[in-house]
Structure formats: C-alpha cells, structure tokens
Length: 92
View 1 (cartoon, rainbow, N blue to C red):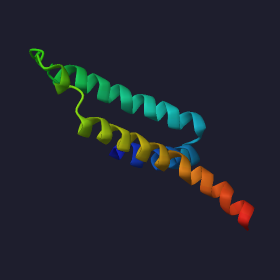
View 2 (view 1 turned 45 degrees about the horizontal axis):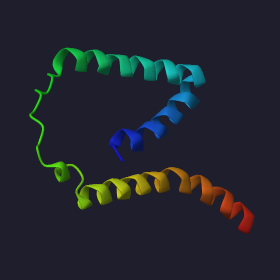
View 3 (view 1 turned 90 degrees about the horizontal axis):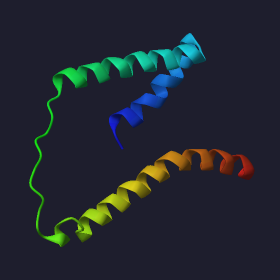
C-alpha cells in the first residue's frame, strides 16, 4: 500500500465536493500529466543487467509469500470497509 493509495481517495473526495465531480478528474489529469512529463525528462533509464543462470533464483519461497501477503492485505483494506458498512446496518 503506497502513500498515494492512502491519501488519494480522501483528497479526490474533497476536491469533488469542493469543485464538482468533473473538476476533480480534470485536476487529477493535470497532476498526472505534470508528473509524467517530469519523469520523462528527469528520470534516467536503468541499464540492462545480465540474466542470472540459476533458475531457482527468481522463485524463492519468501518472495512468493511476501507477494501473497501484500495482495491479501491490499484486498482486505480495499473491500472490508464497504463490507462492514453494510454489516453494521444489518445488525443495528
């Protein structure tokens, strides 16, 4: 989970309520365009590296478990708030 995923939705909601629904998307387009141009001009390419000869170097157990944990945490953080909102309505 990145800072953009945590900060973006509240800022987008605030911008949509303050300026309107369309203006929030126009503002997001402008911000993304500025960052895209900046990255295109100032971020250098990473040089190519030689491939490793060991076939098991890519699939280590810890790497796969870390990826799965990150995926599960992202899904839970994304969908649980919506689930609990409906869940509490049924209970109350």
